[in-house]
Image (cartoon, rainbow over all chains, first blue to last red; front, side, top):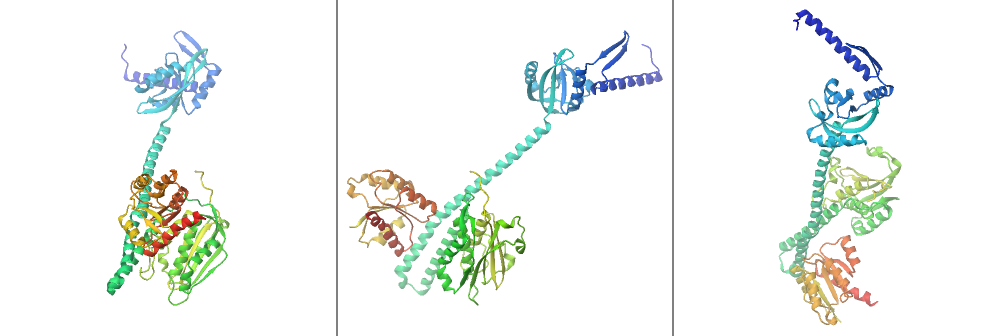
Amino acid sequence: MKELSWDDQEIEISKLRKELAEANDTLEAIRTGQIDALVVSDDSGHSLFTLKSADRAYRLFIEQMTEGAVTLNHDGLITYCNSQFSQLVEYSLSNVMGNYFSDFIFNDDLPLYQELLSKGWTNNVKAEMRLRGATRSIDVQLSLNALEMDGDTSLSVIVTDLTQQKEIERELKAKNDQLRELNDALVASNHDLQQFASVASHDLQEPLRKIQVFTKLLKDNSFHQLPDTSRNFIEKIFNASQRMKVLIVDILTYSKLSAKDILTEKVDLKQIVTEIIEDFDLRIAEKNARVNVADLCEVEGNRGQLRQVFHNLISNALKFVSPDRHPIIEIRMKKLDPVELGLSIDDHSRYCRFTVSDNGIGFDETYTSSIFNLFETLNPKTAYEGSGIGLAIAKKIIEKHNGMIVAKSSIGEGSEFNVILPLKQPVADNE
Amino acid sequence: MSKKVILVEDDLDDRELFFTFFSQRKDIVLLPPASNGVELIEFLNGVVSDEELPDLIILDQNMPKMNGKRALSYLKSEKRFANIPVVVYSTYTDSSLIIDCKNLGAGMVAVKPIDFQGYQKMMDDFLQIFDEIRR
């Protein structure tokens, strides 16, 4: 072989580069359907290669696809591929064509691929497997169809990239697992709460009742034999146990407010409030109180629970009375004016506001939200008896009824509790 | 004629209170108490003559082995005992206990009283069942 000079080599390289560029241009032109015929000159003269029109349409089509497309001959050799496929596996077109497609299949999936290949010539078949790219493995779906082309049959393979889908699936699975864990924890915690309710109902109440029974017996049988101080102690034990009984029953009521209760009966609040006031007859007379009840409408809800709300509110109004004046309690209803309460609620017409107001001792408005917490009492127990659960129960019930409860007050002047309820409850899920 | 009353109660204090508070009453005779549903059924099965069966059964709800509700349901399913009036009493009652017991055929459901007057009132109420039956 003749030694080439440096310059000659330069010329040779640039000539080869040009040829390569031309070849690439030709390839590009064929793939994009710009040309249908090629004239190739070689040692034996010129020869003409034509590309049939159906083939052209096919080439155009697969070049436009977002999926990878490959055609195989009967040996499983790649005779053609589009640029999407070459990008997917990160090999140049020339490094893909002429290779066996099986070279791009992940080892573990080879048996599956062979099976697919054997069926693909007679049926349209699909399967998921992994491809071997230049730098990574790729989850794909292969879809095989036998195609008539240029008077011969070849196998068309559509390659759908599943990477993103698989990633989303993995993420979804992780999220689902997380959700399941959280749900399990919630179920466990709810179960604990139910256990607690059961413990409170029986195991705590039984010994408490014993304390009541025997202090009562002590008082009834030997009260006169005891010195004054001891009588005083017995009274204190009895009162304390009585108070604990109230506490336990209230906690139970609170914990039993489960989501399962039916909320859709018609409840006449005027009737409920009238009944409650009758129940409080004695206390009203005792405190010389005046109770004014305006016309109240019907709402949808759980009768017993709504009764509890108004019972607690009226009971509070009768409890926190001012020593300087006769108590006046007002129970009113009003079409909702949310702005007045500083609230924004969508559909005004469907809501109603019930107000229980008093001229009692009132409270510092700093505590407006904390008074609805469990065991929150603002006043010394000796002055105003109570469990500190009443308003928490009221709030929970009202919120379960898709409403809200808001308190306004000023010390020494009185308090006002506003209960906002929808007139109709949303239709429950069919469970 | 005084009624034969059997108390089914596991708590010793509560049993004692029964005898303390009711020993004066002429309208009832307290049979020896059973401490749970199983003991009650054993006792009843051991009674040979129907005349010897109790006139009234008072069941505590919260008992080991067989609680009040289950004992009640058993009694009402047995032909020989189904007609004996049964009442249930408990430290704590809620609407579901009351409804369940009524559905099972309890004559009455009561909250355990805490003093002498309460006990007398409860027994008076229980005995009214017989007036209702007669009517």
